[in-house]
Length: 147
Image 1 (cartoon, rainbow, N blue to C red):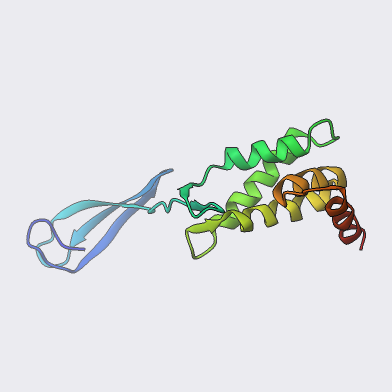
Image 2 (image 1 turned 30 degrees about the horizontal axis):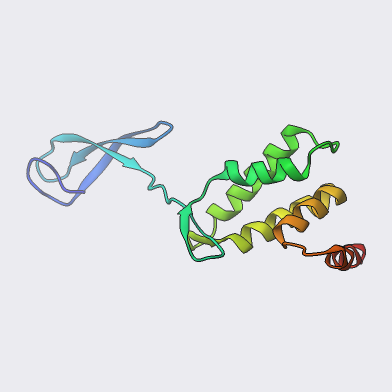
């Protein structure tokens, strides 16, 4: 950290305080002895969704939630459980190295989560996500699910 007074690179931290968005550090220059304050903020990485047709758009957890809500409609699944699933999905995606996420990955994660909590919600979501064309495709998915 450069001293704003003498441009020296050496300083020591005298005090450090965290807030929600940053860390405030009170420093003392080892060359001139003057004190100064620095702030550290975590850089937010915005996730980008790559659609099936190649378009890109900002990730929006509300869109994921809307799909899950539709699949869970009239099922015994609380809104708190759906919110928890959305939080888990968002957290998992943010932990990835890549900030660009294909919709296929998001769909697979959602299906895994729904499969664990409700079979009907899973099949509803899968039928839309996998774009079933007929009842035969639905039966095939049922057989896979039953394994």
